Length: 236
Image (cartoon, rainbow, N blue to C red; front, side):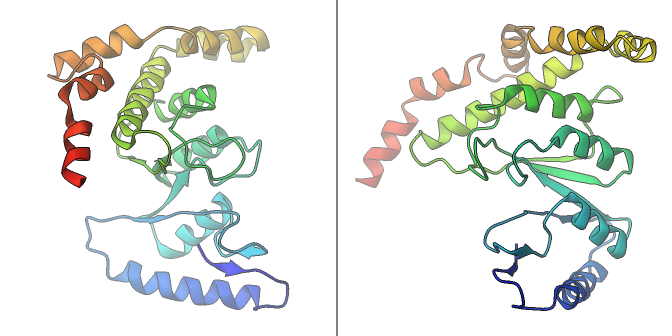
């Protein structure tokens, strides 16, 4: 992220031209099998004008660069009330959704455990991601900052929350949903989503982890392993 703090500090168009020139040079050197992901943030460290302030400016940059340039969505990089799942739907529909930085926020870019503040939003994002039956070809990355909680446990809980949001999204009866939408039945369409969101998928996800050789309760398994205590003693 870069930009300006005050009006008149720099020419906004010239800044964009310099950025596009720089990114274009990097993009031209990419190996054929790689993609170029463009992230955005509407404030910080720039507070007046950020060079890539929103998904629109990131998408325009990708369109300038080429087909292998796609947008990276960080869940914390939006103004309050932004409909992130709609952004996800639009970018996916244009085949320009490159990946995610998963986290959660209450006020701004707080980098809290994903799904800890707004699990409904996370579910709706995965509902859009799972269009077609599965999430494929999109990079799912955790980008968080753990300051007061146990860091490894926080990351494990993040993964568990992502698994459960994905599982709930796969439970949506999409045929019934489309029928309700075509009939103009507003509440039925909403209730179909709510029904999947309210389903307790924790036992199912635990069994799925066990089937793959992982712990049904990974946080409990981590605590029982004594890993955190061992590392704390090593640091002393």
